[in-house]
Image (tube, rainbow, N blue to C red):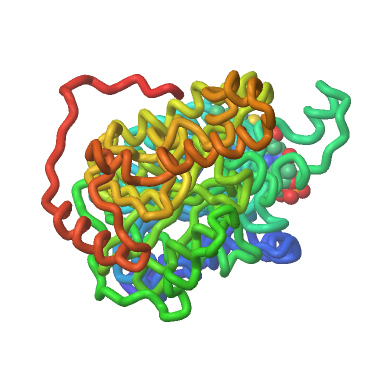
Length: 514
Ligand code: HXC
């Protein structure tokens, strides 16, 4: 073959393989409102930055009529590119090729690009759109999944791992996303479940649609497996690009500092706090009043809304925000909120992102439902995660900090570096009403007017404990500050903590309650 014909041959091969499963399958993909694997990568990465690897990998299966079957790129596109100028490794399953099913070589392509990401120290993004284990390849497909799960675990806490569910993701395949740090779903497109509707019907006799079983909303709102919900693939890619901007490339690096911006005037903190201390406020507004440009990038917004987690920048530095949201369930910690908070703390700690905790919590949620489903072991995760974290930890007590909630929400006792409290803070074992009813029960019952006496005792308890000064007198609060001073205190504390060093006892690893 001459030089020219070799070049022409290369371009022909490349364009054939790049077409994936062919025009018919692509039309079906589009009719389902889905982009193709290559379109997705192009839309997500910086324009023209994608470099593809292993385009000519072929499957090796000889069984069930597979010997002569050509599967373009073996149903997965892999490579690297940039987001906002920063390198990332990426793979996207191509549903137009054998339903994006995962065979041995398909899996090897994925694990190869994951190995790259770990070695190079860059985030790995996986776009999942697949019918699961390639049935014809039998145990080789299962081996492929096992290798992926293993690498997900190796990569955990080393490089950020992002999963995007843009089609079916069924059976054990869901466990790769579950092992990663952030899962993105798109309405009407994403489906995640261990067993599909047919199995549910056979085993349980229950009729349920795929959407109701494991659609995007279910995953983002109810199950909590998804961290970000979008209405379209393009919206989802914009979310991913934003997330990557907040993160460092790996655990040895720090997130990039960008130019500091003051919060927007419309989020003036003094105007956000209700005069009546019983009226709840949206804690996200407090975050916006403290954050650069009032930007708060919320994670798991739809799941366990009684707690908030997310990223913001303060003085140009990425911080992880954790807060109680009094608008829902009065901001209590329950099973779901505990899981949500604990995992986020561990992510931030692994990637050197300082934690800012905003406290307004009446305690853990009581009741048999919570007790029977394990609020003790789930709640313990928060204690563990905060105690274990050695990144800078700054706590601001806004209002209530009662009981276990006070301790759990990054108190000094769990090694917060700084605890600030507003004058409105109430730091006590429990709320004044409950406390007075218990400790003054006999006095109240013996009184000529028990109701009057109860009010008196509630007031007595409030005057004594429902403030920040008792805690401040023991040094459990470092400074009682006016709300409008909060950002200045945070900026200074973060600046001071930039050179923080703290370690924990040497060990193989701890045994957290999960
Ligand atoms: C081989 C598969 C496949 C699979 C789909 N295809 N799934 N090929 N192995 N797992 C092929 C189809 O045969 C078809 O090929 C093409 O992909 C498109 O599939 P359709 O069924 O036409 O698409 P659609 O109607 O959109 O349905 C999508 C689907 C369905 C819901 C995902 O294909 C399906 O139920 N697939 C099987 C899912 C499954 O049970 N997977 C195994 C799970 S167990 P042609 O040639 O006709 O275009 C598992 C274990 C993992 O994954 C364990 C890890 C620990």
